[in-house]
Image 1 (tube, rainbow, N blue to C red):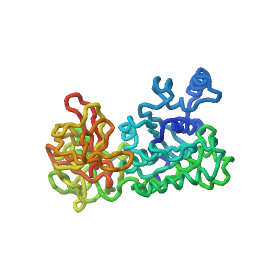
Image 2 (cartoon, one colour):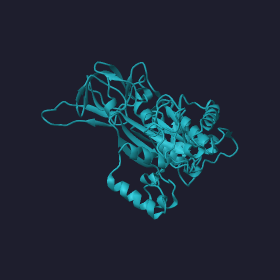
Image 3 (spheres, rainbow, N blue to C red):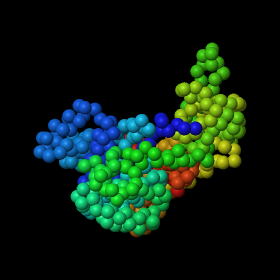
Image 4 (cartoon, rainbow, N blue to C red):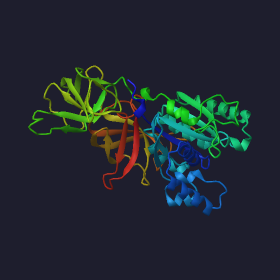
Length: 418
């Protein structure tokens, strides 16, 4: 079934400061004709004011005024654009060490991560950090954009050296699909249009890659997981007996007639019908939002999960998590936090901090166990009621949790279940 025409690709950009991430996104938007005339005029005026000789495409993405003044990206800026082949959401994330949390936020749902490397500087510490975070977050596809090739005379040798260095480093990480593209975001080489300055490069342009990379199998299509968001009871004469369970499929495919089990009750039933906004379906798969109707009347509510009888997630209250901490106030050992997991809201206690990870070397720090803002570490928690979990590497939806401070209602951390 081809649903590519409406397929949505999410990608995130990462790189060291001034590697040209914002310029690259500006170039994609500009060359793929995805920006409005008035936006372009505002950027032209802004570039002139700053005394720049060329139009500064980076200003298209730097939405915050303080960023435009400093010329850096602070927050995660989301941009939406589409081409005839696909729809795209870009998360432009900052490169500074103190914004690890922003990168984690922008990258958590991405299919593709673009890691920018300045051709003059090669693979620097920041490049490694971003690749490590991309592999921790299990982003399926990585594109190493070797940018500013115009400043090294479009040298094939420079490109090959950087590629080799990155490959050596990446062999230690869990990254399956790595792609390299030499480019100049400023001049437009190999971004949307092929470069006439690098005839030695036989690969595709960045936009061609983004339009054609296969993302259908990025979702877990084996393990059936359907967290129930809400129960639909219209209570009208026409739909007098209608009882549907609405939610977004987190894994596997559900077909009419499939035998399913409901957690936590363990009751079983069969799928009688699959409804969507656009009509009935025979089969549904991630990331569709659907309403399932079952043959039997079973008491099901928000937070329950519909799964296969012989393929269940782990049901547990003791969970090991890799956590990225977002808050100025450090993680409190034995502290209590609210957590959200799929459609369940429960509370938990931090039982133990196992280690803190050095994001630059991947080494485990067993001495300093205080997890502060932007730190990533391994902890174990105990929840007030059982959750239905998979490991994050198996399913990014059922394998992730969000930590919330009950006093302030702030999101204080994001966790990946081990």
